Length: 153
Image (cartoon, rainbow, N blue to C red; front, side, top):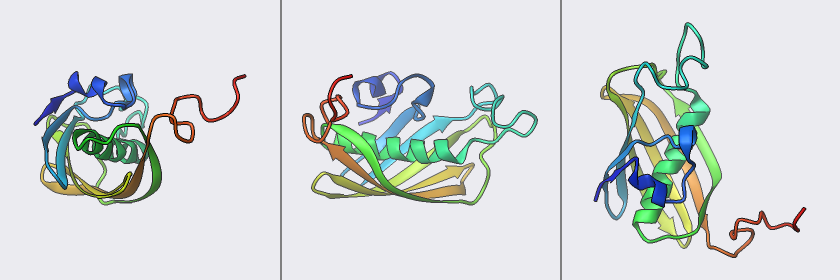
């Protein structure tokens, strides 16, 4: 099963510019491969940094979390994904380029917690590795109903 950017709207993910992933190429029981286009006209490059464009590390971490959320959705987990723990190592700056950034994730599931290791590669070279724990909060549990868990304003 593959997902295109338009398909990703049915999954509980950020919208607009915050949706980092353009395609999910393959998804199976423990592995997922996704792509993100970082063409020179990408919205982030004029902002970070003008004259020295690099893709921000915080958005690389966000994208890795989205990769694991797509895997969780594909494997039947429903609810609201919440990043619970993350560590990242950055090896190579991601700059504007014609080819995609490839995300290769390996995920283990412990109840409703997805433990993922996601490698970001550019042109076959390792750019970053993100280790994360993503909790899928079921609807109606601990603010999972969208209310934030607190009383209305």
